[in-house]
Image (cartoon, rainbow, N blue to C red; front, side, top):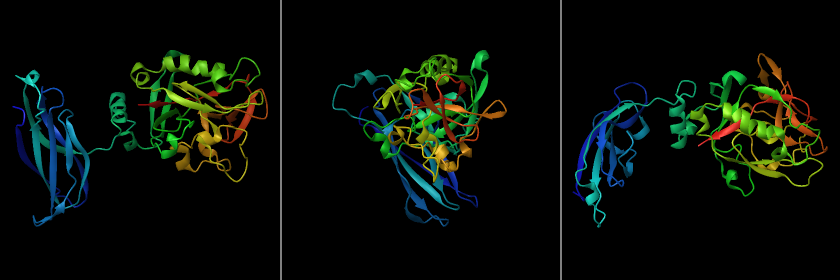
Length: 348
């Protein structure tokens, strides 16, 4: 009945010679009690190799009993024992709780080896669940996985480009394109013009490229992934015909200059007017990619390095957009020229 509780002790000892990680789990679980009224918490004592208590280890805060994993990636040193005292409580709400009459709960507590998420081998359902649970940062930046875009576009490679969300992502007017769990195509899907006419008026939001990637490419992505793609606030630079940068909301988007290159000692790219409204993606930052060290920005179309479009209009002209050259450096080209398409998107 409401107010009932019980305690259980579970001890975990590391008998090996190296440190290890483990998860606390339900080996089996049945819980039909509703409204999150059945909860679990635990305190933990740390015992040395002689079995003497030497302080505490990480406790498990009270939470509803729902997931099979109770606590994840707990570190334990060689020879050390973690002694948990679990408390299971059927919460008293001081209100009518008859909706939980006839419900049941039983389970078996246990542990399992912690295994780091692996983007290459995890299923998409596992990857998406981890990202939604806030565990996307456990995947390694730069990890890749193939995705089949159907008969029109074939098989291509997705790469984890970002997992962090630093405080600057909360700035007003800041692009969310390099915030959170970002996947980018590591290779070029197809070549396409930025616009049907030689103009950069209206910037990225007005391009036929934006329509192409958010319709044709987006709809070619398998449904399981597509259903997890979230709307992203995209800030992009303007050309000579306009006076202010643009903000749009997209599922898929091209990258901008600052998301690829930090400002190196040469080849200034101040011609991207929205450069200060985004940040460098973790992947390119880890490589040290800059305007003077740019080989990390190379992408291939098939087996050959090829140029690929960015979403930034070139501010000095009314007809060009910036792109990444086949050497990884930056340049600009007429909007009617076909160049590589390698968009990014966020899961969440």
